[in-house]
Length: 373
Image (cartoon, one colour):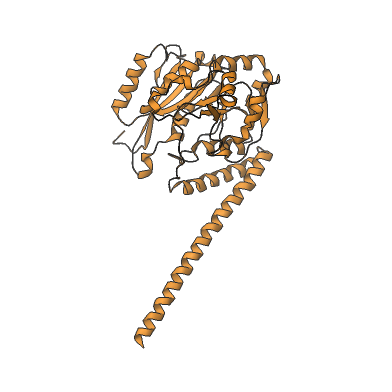
């Protein structure tokens, strides 16, 4: 790898749990099954145990490795927890650090790795610092078997949103936080939100657009017989979702580190015409230390423009060939306006720059002519 021209490589299915199907025929038996697609760096290895304690279905996890010792460490970890990881498949992703940007964690490359090598019909892309409620796998499987309309909605481009919550407790040391901070059931979560005030919707005050459209008040009060309620996509909405794996777009890999990485995938799904509905009795809970506000790296703006241009071409093609819908048309209008605004801002900065340069040049000319006299 080091002597090749490759920027990155993957080792898919490097470790397969003892309960994971090993051939194509057995994998076809996973029709209707759901995988958890996870990713993380080596310092998040222990967090995997939180997931397999709560999630009893298949798990596809991609680990970011920087050297051979990382791979050895993960293999030792698997051997130590072999019974707990019986339904877990490990993939390894590694790359060369060529420029400063490459030093940041490649969230979306890792998500693609975990997603690409899942074997089930449905998938939940989730980050290592979030866990689902207890018995989520069993509840979801029963829902899909019992409610064919729900399965049909998944099969016709509906994403089922898992509302996200977090602890309000100030936890300094991430490594010592137990899974018990995450409520096991919706009833327990409601008590933590309403009564003890220990929990709250995820980042609702820090970044409302990210999860606000979930409509948490409706979810907390929802007690009808329906298993979901519809919500509308709004720009910057970035929920965790249950989706049919086939047809999902790749995550845009230009975004690394903090800023826009997961959000861009949801925006892409919106352009493709996906709808959103919130699952009534299921949720995800953040178990890591609450993140503080950060400034975007300087290149995020450039990458954002590239991504918007990519979405514009996709939306135009979808509409041209009759594959888009109102979502696509509305998204295209917004994208075109954003790109035009960006161009106007760029042109305005260029004009101001050249005016400044021209003004300085004229000032220097006057000084020079006075010296000549």
